Image 1 (cartoon, rainbow, N blue to C red):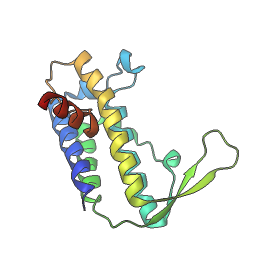
Image 2: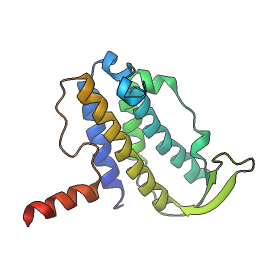
Image 3: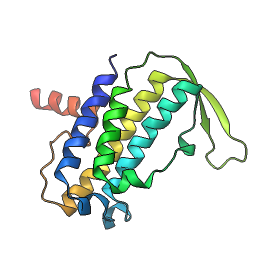
Image 4: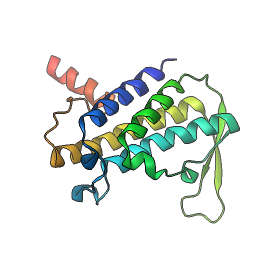
Length: 165
């Protein structure tokens, strides 16, 4: 499936980073991230994909009702394991789904969507959180990240195009 490759590339980058971090670097609050940790951002990424996988089975995706597993945000090995699990699960066929959105409403709104659309959303959302993780890594560690870490594929393509001109 064509969307599995970009998702897996992100998961590989994220797992490589997690292997490079100490446990303290993974779960310590970072001031420039509003005291969120790299672990909290990683958990958020993982749980959105987990919710999409659950929603694929039930037909109803509700990102707001995700588990929020403290073990993922405090234990790098668990996070790495979960990244491998969600990576293996991204090869599903497209199918219609329903998306629940509350956004402060008293009655949830349910809209039509599909698996590929939600997978694209999760990929883009992952890039966004990896950009935030990049800020945390730069401010808290000496780890040298790849230039593409936390950068949207459209930005990478645009930069290559600009360099070629």
